[in-house]
Image (cartoon, rainbow, N blue to C red):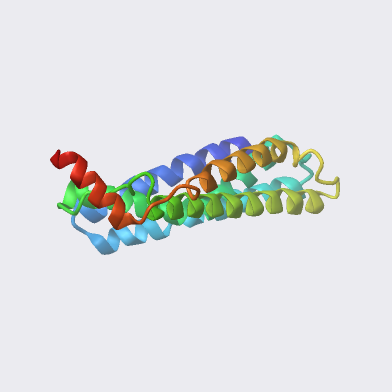
Length: 187
């Protein structure tokens, strides 16, 4: 049952996100779109409540509870950024807004964005593992079974950290980078 709730919540996230963007930009009803987008975090509340109910009603802590914890952590860590990303592209595609731009490689902006992404990943990890531990303690059966996926996630977090911070090693001033790029294109 919990796996069905998790799947429904994941589908619900994308449906609410798409409906919010379409309502906001295609139907030109920004307030109604904002209401739909404001409902997106409720999906995580539903998932958390379903996990707690499953544990409290005697469900044995397992991977499905860990999966819910991971989804909740990722949503907390990356949810706002995902909404901003989708909003930027929807505004560009449907409302004539400016094209979202990616920072250029080798610039301070790119390095800063990569570090910020890792900090979001760290937040997602802390929230997800915290939920795993809380569900384990709530079950009274411990959290060993719940923390299994955390080992692989830890490795991914470390690799992401190494890659993200590697962008900080050889950065140039954003203006210098732009001038050199313009000079190369002019030649």
